[in-house]
Length: 171
Image (tube, helix red, strand yellow):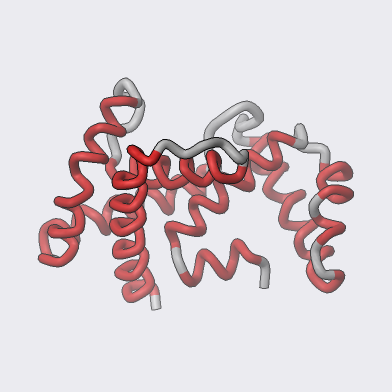
């Protein structure tokens, strides 16, 4: 089973962030599947290579069909974000523990949405972007300003709880 499929089944938030990372990877390789094969796929275990090649090829095709060569996210990935937002809305009304978790995150979400200049209006998207931004800093070996860590931790807690509830409802 490919990493993406396992993540989608086990932790929907991790899956979404993984898909964002994969989209950026394909862009970094300018959708050149042969180059990606040499530098990424050929380093996977032999038994996973063919499935990975097919998966990356399909993702690249869909991204290009959806005009995502420069930026943006696959429609199907964003559909998961919308569904996660719908769950967020439900849990705010019905789950005391979620409301408490969200209240600890709300200021960070508000700050993130304000910093986006109005381009992000979905609190779940703000949390996902915060975690993904942190991941990018780490992957690129950039110094991490400790002032962002409370927000990253709060985003992670919120997304973990949402993913837990998602898994309960999906299985």
